[in-house]
Structures are given as C-alpha cells and as structure tokens.
Image 1: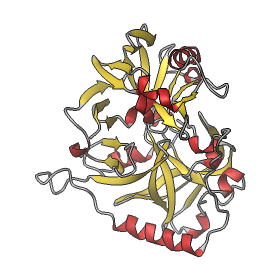
Image 2: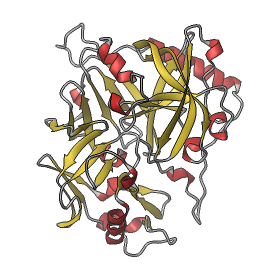
Image 3: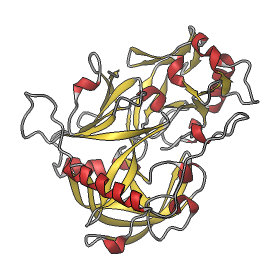
Length: 387
C-alpha cells in the first residue's frame, strides 16, 4: 500500500528541490551497479546472537532511507542476476518491477527487467492491474529466480510492469515493490515472496522485522527468519492480527492533550512500511490538522512554521492496552529552514473489507519510533521502542 509524500518535490516559495534522474546509464553507474551486485551476492546472514543455532536461517539486509519518506533495498531477479531497488512493503503482497516493454515516463526513469537476458525466466502471459494509494501499474506475470542477500527463491512469480502512472511512482528512488502482507491480498493464483521463503524452508522461522532509522548515521534494516533484538529497547509487546490480509490490529484510542481525536469507539490500524504518513479518515484528519495547526501557512493545512514544533502536543495511540506516544518531532517533517510539514493525511476510507468504518494506517512516522516484528506463525505483530 502506498501513501507517499515526496517532501523534496514540494515546490515552496523559497525552494524547489527535485530528485536527479538519468535516462541513460553512465560508465560510473555501470561500475557502481556491478559493485552493488558483488556486495549483494557476497552478503552473509547476520546471526541473532553468539549462542544462536548455527543452522539458523536468518538474514538481515540494509535499507536506504530517502528523506525519512521511503525505505528501500536491493534484490536481484534472473540468471544472470539483474539488480533492482524495491520498497519492502507490508501493505501489499505482490512483487513487481518495470519491464523493458514499459515506455511510460515512470518506467523509463527506473531500472527495467529484460526477460530475454535471463536464462531462467518463464513467461506466464497473465495480465495484471495493481492499484496503490499513490499510483497504479498494468503488466503481465512471469517467473524467475529472486535473490535477497543470501536468500534464493526459484520460480517466483512476479509482475512485469508495462504501464505505470506518473506522479509519485515516477519520482520515487526505487524501481518496484516487494509486498510482505498476507497471500489473500496477492494476485489470485500467485504465492508472495515471504510465503515462498517460509513454505520452502529458506528461512528457519516464519517472521520478519523492520528497523527504520530516522537518522542517516544509523542503518535501517529488514530481517528475515528471525529477530535481532539489539535493534529495540525493552520487551516486545505482541498484538494479535485481527484480519489476515493487511498487517491489521485493533486500536482502542487516539488522543491529543487528553482529547479523543480518533478511534473513539475503537478502530482498526494497518501497520504499513510502504506508507510514509499517518493516514486516517479524511474528516478526522481535517480536525486533527486544525487542532495542531490553527494558523496554516501557504494556504495549506499541513504546512506550519518550524519554530512552533517544540510547542506542539504528543499524539498517544493505545494498542492492546499499551500507549504508544508519537511526539511532534516524529510527526513533523522539515521541508526547509522555516517551513515544516505535518505528516497526517486523509483517505483511509478507500480501504475495503477491513471490517470497520474507521481505519488508520500507521506508516513510517510510527515505525521510525517502534521496531516492528511480523510473526506469520502466530499471526501477531511485535512492537518495542527502537534502539
């Protein structure tokens, strides 16, 4: 699921920042890509601890943090391997990358998969349409060998995009999406990447986890097959999944300064690494923005002067009896020296079949604060303050 806001692309009166894009591969890029592939293939699984089982199939992978907006990492597809940057997304279940048959501006600005250069590719010729909060793609299915660090899956079905919407998907710094939600969200007749890792015993435990850093000096990480507990403080608090589609849990309240601002009768929350913001019903988000920002600038309710950030209130979320504070320095993003952005957005009412009239999406704003573990074996999510 994608609700992304590319803060660097917001045009303000005092600055315009754009992502540099290159249409043709330079020699330097080719050398960098070759080195990236070599580093990837040489990557060794990180052990849980010194006393862990030597046969433990656990692997940890570095993620890149783009402006605290999106986190993405490297995979390869095909034989010989073709390198792609993907968004590891707990809000969707499908894997797809652009194909050489896609000539949309959104594809031409990213790495594209060439099936003819892979000896292990098998075409399936089934057409697909995928829709996200910030864009869509049309394409076909194929299968090939997928590698994430030292984890290898043969005959993995994935999507080859032949047409993509412009806008966010055109500007993002990654090529495709690797979904990590439940198989019930996947394209009918396909098995998601994580389910193949689990079912084929490529990993020892049916769990994965995310550490999303808010500071460039700290490496963000996704781990498969186990949990490295050095990435969190205190005990993991386990929350049962309420519906095995999204990573969806029950939330009992949302307050600011003691006032209920959402979830007044209880609600559902989707924990989503593929969404940048805190997303909720439009009418509730509008009220929250008015409460936080009574005097918006640039005629935009999400824009406010940065000098007021320290005086803003903390948001409190109650999940399974535990209160999770979200202070203003996490739900506010700095766009420039003087202008800041409130990371709330409406639109969650477009979600279907979530079993409730009120749903919130807890995106990276929340997940930078809290280390998260996704346990498919017990259908639960573990949360603890990030280290």
